[in-house]
Length: 398
Image (cartoon, rainbow, N blue to C red; front, side):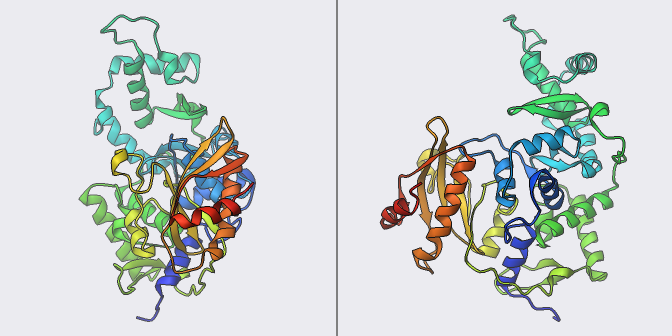
């Protein structure tokens, strides 16, 4: 093979593509938020708020001056929209047409939203058309009459069905409460609204993955997406790009083959161990667990959905990236009322270096993250190994 690339170069290339090797790779301010969403293809939304919510955390990791209000501003300015990627996400408005296949499947009843009452759906649509944007709670009733169709649950299901099939869009939020309006009133007139054919949709997925990660595979591209037809279409796009030499298949010992963009084939940078990143469990860089395990030998699992007695690391652990190495994870909680940020349990798993190498940048990042969470002081409860506790407490004094 003409182009040889090492594991370390693959690691550096994918972290660079993810925007995790520079201080401000996407710029600053609200424009940087739009740049991140367009480059990565999506930002996953999550409601868990043990620490700052995942969508804000993911952007803060890449934008030094990120403010949570930037996302809401961009939704209101119709530059980004909420819909489904592999999960609820913020997406670039320019990619709206690629949400249409999912919308049409829902409209045709291929989802658990098929149980929505059509009568309720029509009333919800008519109400929003006449009165403007509504939240789910705006359809609550004070009546306790059992068996009534006009109450919150049927209306909420109707709202979600109308949203998922494209009749409604989220035009803003009040906290985490969605505000729904008619798609015709939200969608900019410049946006393409013709459904892509299956080949175009497959190409969109391939190019989005390559842009965001620098390298990919058929399995990664179709992650959480079902259907043999989609896999065949994606594979056809891959074969065409290979034939046109836009990408190349790379084999690194011990890894499954990966597809690498041509512009990364000559990438020789190896990331120095100097900066620490505390990543959201829903960060784009960590969300594909097999990929992270293969590339970085880091086995990550979010344990908040695991029964307490079966958790090994903690409820809401954040992966710790030091340079190009995942050195551990830390279970955190922001006690916002008391303005205290707690490191419930810090787990260091990479013992190939001295503590002094990562301790100072780790402490700096934790202090920065605590402030982002509205906290003014830090506390550390437990560390593994336990003899780190004293050093960590000393270094983290705020």
